[in-house]
Image 1 (cartoon, rainbow, N blue to C red):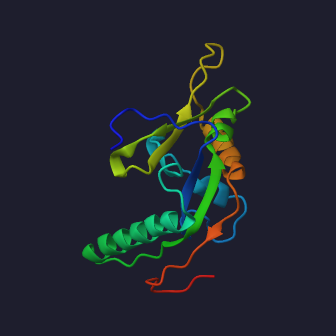
Image 2: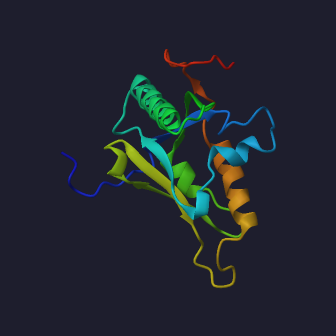
Length: 167
């Protein structure tokens, strides 16, 4: 169906599934922006390519499915999960790509269908300036703060299977 390599255009929208409290914190305005995208060990972060998932309801269905999977995995380990899918936030791929830190680092937005035809990833794009080599921790934090600001406000959702209601 989608065998050829696909390019996410700058005009394409990408959406980030939001889980509470993990990604939005508990109201701490200083910490929450750094939790929205974490890039653990420098790994890319998942987003939904809206070209392949056109309706908001389809994005919400992905979020509910991800929540159900997390709950099932926690149950198998005998743990309780307090992360609940709360909706998504969106941004234009070109706006994400245009974002630059003071030292010229930025982001890649690439199609990565390993988790489905809708799946894309955002990763760090280090600058190519030999005078400013490598991404420092301060660059990563600066970029993560910018990235949080680039995405729209939450498009809220409440899964019917949520075991607890979180405002």
